[in-house]
Length: 197
Image 1 (cartoon, rainbow, N blue to C red):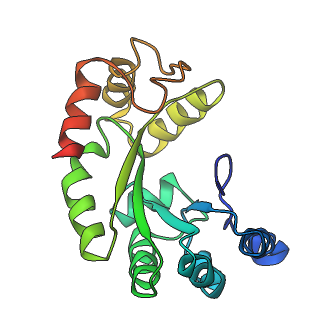
Image 2 (cartoon, rainbow, N blue to C red):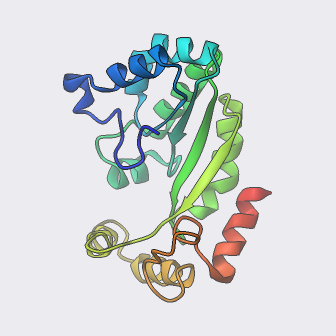
């Protein structure tokens, strides 16, 4: 899995070019690989991805948090804008590479209203599957996120943080393996059902 911890196509990859070496190794040894990214730099390696795809060894997921360019720009600087990510899904799909989207993270009170439009649009661009991850705020991330909300969405800050708590059993994070990506409680179930429909 490329991107379990960090995006394999972040801006530094332009210089280091580590990811194609990993993909070449996977191809050489016929090792299946999943790639998840927020960046259209993945298209640089489309030839390798096609070769892996011919052997049914790869699927690619583009992580899209929001279709709103202004929100995406402030929330995820140094990543491709939503339209670029969708165009990347289309290019990969058009070239025979299994491709889907991951709405991650879903931010209660800020992005869950976009679930229907994001999934519909992703499908129109060729996505064949979709997944979701609920926002969680471990350790120092909770303070950084609260400051980000205060700076960018001060009128929504309390609502968003309270809704995050409502899907995390009253806390901003739940490290329980079973629940950490999904959330718990009624509001989390509401979001999951909306996504499923």
